[in-house]
Image 1 (tube, rainbow, N blue to C red):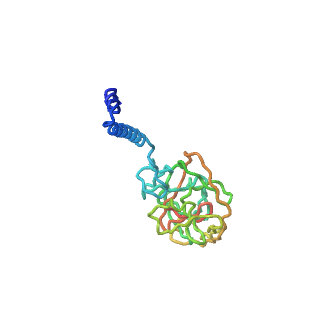
Image 2 (spheres, rainbow, N blue to C red; image 1 turned 180 degrees about the vertical axis):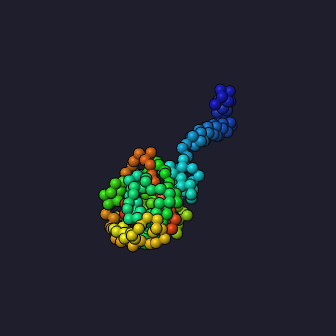
Image 3 (cartoon, rainbow, N blue to C red; image 1 turned 120 degrees about the vertical axis):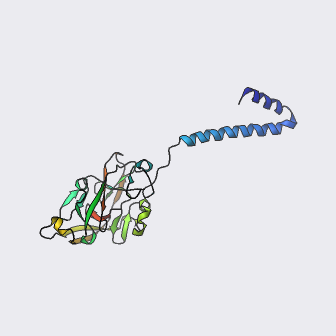
Length: 239
């Protein structure tokens, strides 16, 4: 407060008729200063990030650091080394899967890779299922005997609400690939065919999360067909 203004308020306090008005003036001045400082703090506060499954325009808006450019939502993925079941009966680390590769999906459907997404982990945990390595983020849908489920179903994009994704918990039974009968000749000649696959339901006995390096490279596949594939033999959706 300026010295001249302080002197005026001091004189006013000396008379009973002016004391109440002077106190009101002091209170208003103090409150205004406080609100002004609060406004400065708000202006410099870190913007709230967007959770997985919510809209985004750039990856900087996502808590996870990844904005899926095809649907403009913050999305989830797998780490390098996650094995993908190929339509020729082999498996391949996800980082070596390329556009136009043929991937094995649910019901033996052969799906083509239309895009490979390459985000980084950002500030979110990775998860281990049944003692596996920590290979997946929380928003990826896994198929169970009861339908699609994710570790964090709130991370599912609203565009995929028709999947009706529930919460994955210990005790759920995950659909797991145990065998695939690939036709003789294989390769791209099987593009239009469905492959005979054997699926078993495996109980989820442990589910553990842990932090990892925010710069960890992640991968996700965009597919045609029924948009499903097997990651580490677990049936998942490409989101």
